[in-house]
Amino acid sequence: LGANADEMFFTSGGTEGDNLAILGGWRVLKPKGRNAIVTSPIEHKAVLQSVHQAAKEGAEERLLAVDPTGTVTLESAERLVRDDTAICSVMWVNNEIGTIQPIAELAAHAKARGAIFHTDAVQAYGKVPIDARAIPFDFLAISGHKIGAPKGIGAMFIRRGTPLEPLFFGGSQD
Image (cartoon, rainbow, N blue to C red; front, side, top):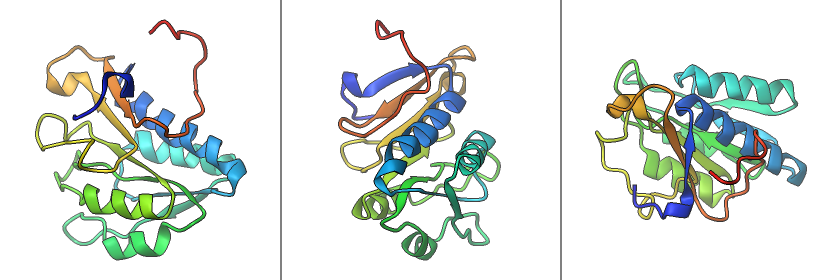
C-alpha cells in the first residue's frame, strides 16, 4: 500500500473500516461546518448504510452521477464536493460490475476542497496497484477474506494527521 506501519489499523473487515471512516470522519468535521457526505449510488451497503446513518444524525447526503459503464463522473464530483463536504467515499473497484473508479482524480479533487477521501478497496486490494504515497486518499478499507485470510479480518489505512472520531474505545494495546 505504500503505507507506514503507524498508518495501518486492524479491523474486523471492510464493513468496520467503511463505518469508521465515514461516521468517524464526518462526526469530527461536522462541528467545523463540514456537514455533507458525498458518495455514489452503487457503493457497497457498508458505505451506503453508514451514509444513511450519518443522515439520520443530520448529515447532508449527496450522490455522485454514474455513467452507463458504472463510472463515477468527475463532473458530478466537481459539482457536489464543495467546501462544506466532510467526506467523499467511492469504492475503488465495484463488487458487482467490476468498474475501476478514477480514484486518483476523485481523491485529488476532494483534497483540494478540504474534504477527507475514503475508498473501499476490498475488491481492489491485490488486483490493482495501490500506493498511498502517490494517490491522496485518507482512508482505505480492505478485507482479508478477499486475499485468502479468514473472514473477520481486515485493515484500514488512516493517513497521518487525518481527523477521526473513534467508534470503539479502549484496546489501545492493539
